[in-house]
Every structure is written in structure tokens, then in C-alpha cells.
Length: 152
Image 1 (cartoon, one colour):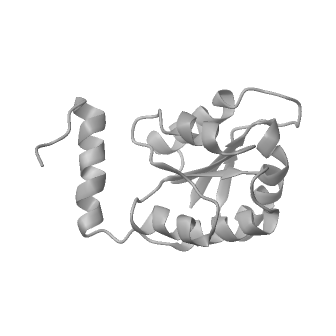
Image 2: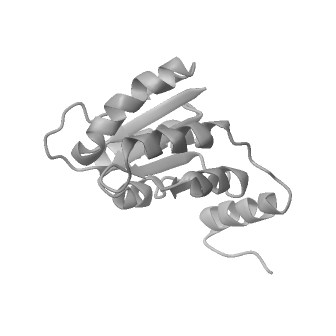
């Protein structure tokens, strides 16, 4: 799988640790930056990571920051992206099984690295369940296209 990855300065240390892990797991990594720990603005690195997924350059993306909130918000501005902010095993699993999240957001200042690594492993290994969840994903995509919710 091709995984795009992006962070700001507050997520840089975990990004640098996750890249070799992803490669060890057999994934190709597209590093969208930042490439240093100096203060920087996250949209410049998060949006390109999300765009890589949206255009098919990558299968999924992982974005990192201090809390992961701004990163999730930025990624979700890209059409076709379903970015989930995860903080434990269950949120990682459900983001894939129920929401078919194609971008994972992590907050380096919120969770220990060992938790982040476990979340990444679960998120990459968990399949989308489909079924009733497919309808909900389609409803979100329809809204994204038209600006209107379908009749319920």
C-alpha cells in the first residue's frame, strides 16, 4: 500500500519514527513534509498528504500534529477524504470498519508513541465492514458533491 504522510513541527518526531515502521510493514511512503522540527503551518503539509489520497497517488495517508485536530480539519477539506482523529485502539478500528477512513490523524502531544504505533497498525490492518455503513459513506459523498442531504 502507498501511504502519504505529513506533519507540522509538533508531529515531526512521530512522523520520523513512523516512516521506517511503515516501510518495515511493506508500505511505500510518500513523505509530504515537514522535514524539520522548526515551527511551521500544518496546512502546507497536511493538505498535500490528503490530496495524494484524493487523486489516487496514495492509498491512504497519516497526518500528525500536536493535537491532531487541525490536521484532521485540514485533511477533511479535501474532497473525498474521510480523516479520523484517533487516540486509542477502538477509535482506530471503528474509523476503518464503520467510516472507511482513508486518512488517519494523530496528536503527538496527546498520546505516547507506543499508542500511536499500535493505532497505525490497527488502522492499516482493519477492513471496511460495508453493509449499512456503505449507505452512510455514500450519503456523505453525495452531500460533498451536491451540498444537499438526500431525502431520509
